[in-house]
Length: 317
Image 1 (cartoon, helix red, strand yellow):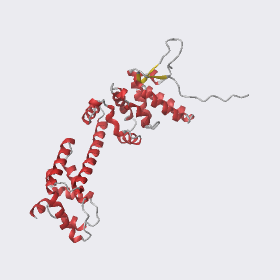
Image 2 (cartoon, helix red, strand yellow):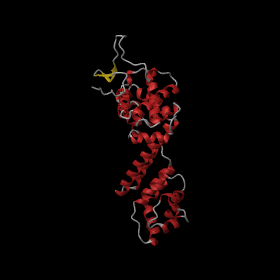
Image 3 (cartoon, one colour):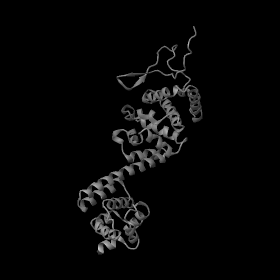
C-alpha cells in the first residue's frame, strides 16, 4: 500500500506561552543533545543585509513551489513578531530587517505587524526599536508612498503613535525619534497625515458652529486656539475657513443677485477671516476661484471678485 508523501511545513523554533510572561517565552531543552532550535534560520545567518536577503530568496522559492504554505507563513511570522521579546537584540534586528524586505517586496501584508502594538512590547521599547529597523529596511525596497499605502490597507497607519509608551506618546516625540534615526520621510509623512486629521476636525467643528449660528467671537477663539495648538499655517487655515463659509450658503439661482448675497454673508464672518489671515484675503479668494470653488451658480460672483479687494469692499459697505 502506497503512503502519501508528507507535505513540507514551516517549522523551527518552538514557542510556548506562560501566564507569568506576557507575550510568552522561548522554551529550550536543557539537554544539549536534544535540538530545540535549528541553526538553519535567519537568526543564524550573518549580520549583513545581503546575507539576510539570501534567506528571503529561500522563502520566495519555497512558497512559489508550495503555494499552500503562504497563509501558514504569514501566520507564523505574525506569531514570531508577537513573541520577539524572547529573542536577543541581534535576533530581533535580523527579524526586523527581513520583515522589511518581506513587506517591501509584497511577500506578505502588513497585517503581520498587528502584534507590535501589544503593551508588553511597547512599554519596553521593543516595538519602537523593531519598527525603526524595519522601516529602514522597507524603505530600501520601496518609497514612502508605497510604505504608507501598505500600512493603510492593513489599517495600521493611524496607530503608529502607539509604538511609543503612553508617557512618551506624542507627535513631537514621533518626529524627533525618526528624524534622529535618519528616517525623515517617516517623520514627515506622519506629520502630514496628522495635519490632515487636524484640519478635518477643524473643518467639521467650524461647520457645526456656523450651522448653530454661534457668535463670530466664539468661532474666532476656537479657530485661533486650534491653529496655535496644532501649528497650522494661516494660509491653509484661511482657505479652509473660506471654503466652509462659502459652503454654508444656499446660493441664489439668479446670477445677478449672487454678489450682493455673498457680500451680505461675508460681512458676518469678515472678523474671522481677518483674525486668521496674515496675508491679503484677496489672495485666498483668487485661490478659491482657481482651485476650490464649485462653478454652479457662481460665475458672475467669481468674475467680480477678481476686480476688487474683498476685505475693503466689505468694510466699506
